[in-house]
Every structure is written in C-alpha cells, then in structure tokens.
Image (cartoon, rainbow, N blue to C red; front, side, top):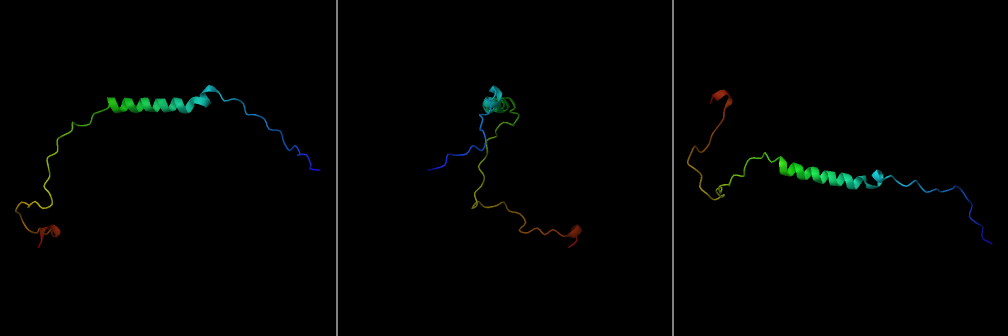
Length: 77
C-alpha cells in the first residue's frame, strides 16, 4: 500500500501587488517614450544639413605639387 505524502511546510499565496508594482514598467515605458520624443523634437541645435559636393574618385589625378616631403628634426637636413 503506497504511503501518503508527508506535509513538510505550508505554502501561502503572496499578497496581491499594489497598482504601482503591477504597472510600473508600463508607466516608465510611456514616460521614457515621451521624454525621447520631447528631446528629439525640441533640442535640434544641430547645424543645417549642408549638401555634400562629390569627392574625386580614386582614379582622379592629383594636383601637381612636391613629390615627397621629408620632415627633419628642428629643420636640419
């Protein structure tokens, strides 16, 4: 005949969480999104976008100039 299970301890349900504890992640998410929207729309002190001029490709000839520049210590050669 199988033995009946022994009682080791008594389990109790935890108390129901308060409204803040149950919904704080939602409130903080909404506050973060609102703060991000406010910062993104009100703090645009960035300079106006300048149209970029096309840069020469790698195959474009360079301007004529000295072929080699050697830097020496204190200008002595």
